[in-house]
Image 1 (cartoon, rainbow, N blue to C red):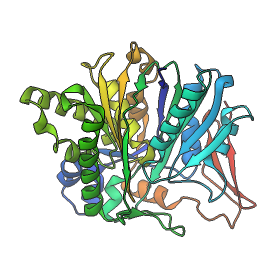
Image 2 (image 1 turned 180 degrees about the horizontal axis):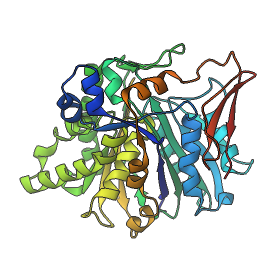
Image 3 (image 1 turned 180 degrees about the vertical axis):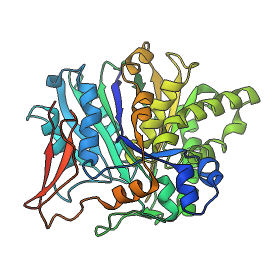
Image 4 (image 1 turned 135 degrees about the vertical axis):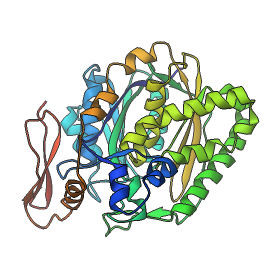
Length: 389
């Protein structure tokens, strides 16, 4: 039985920050950000957006062409949950108009949660081939102003519909995975910003990729020459290159050039959006499929998912006939181009205006009448939303 991605959509807030401007304001050489880190822009979250609104806005585009009656489960991967008890999936289920007799669950394990949700969706559909699962991976990467991680912030959501009609790609039965207890990245319950040991996190990422790659080859009897390209979890775009260069000597120079080109294509959207944790790998995949003119049905794409702390998985997809037409129904580049570029002052004001304190009734700056899901603020310690389709 073939199970895979039937539909795939992306959403990011309508504001951006230029990394050259940020570098100048922080007294850094712009090349450190644009070349050394590999980021050109990052999406900035207003205080009327969160993972619920972004996830809903991404999935709503997908559901325009899909009947909700067959959706049996909603899995929401995030490490930026809006409540320590109530699942973001339940909020999202409500706004998306899904039926009551489904499961709606939030999944958390750093940046890996979206991949675990995807694999659970695959397993469920394999057992229930007449059903579909909606997977949302949404996050806000937030490290604080004037911090080393500020350049790797971002926000966005990717929604995927998993079914036995994979119009985009089949999920292959070839996963390898591993977990290690690593203090490389964490966010305490009482903190709204993440803490990270960047050097250790990079080392763990590279080591896990290499370890899984060696196991993948043995377990699946595959070699690097079997792959048309890779998509990586990209907390910053240079990270994917650090992993891939470790295995490039396994193929000849011509194949190395092709794989490097695919890598550049897979980094494009992430370079303009920034880090979106659980959704980062899948934005990279979307970028690769949108930007490459040389991929074709039947090509095998490797995916490396990584979540600090640390957990990782390596698996592959096989592209299906007509995937380009399905993806062309949304225009990610147009969405990115329409974002309003913020001044540094506007960015810092927006960053500090987030409404984390539920103790006082307060309204967000939601403009309303946007046709998108918006967070309205707090009332009686409870989050208030509006969504008018």
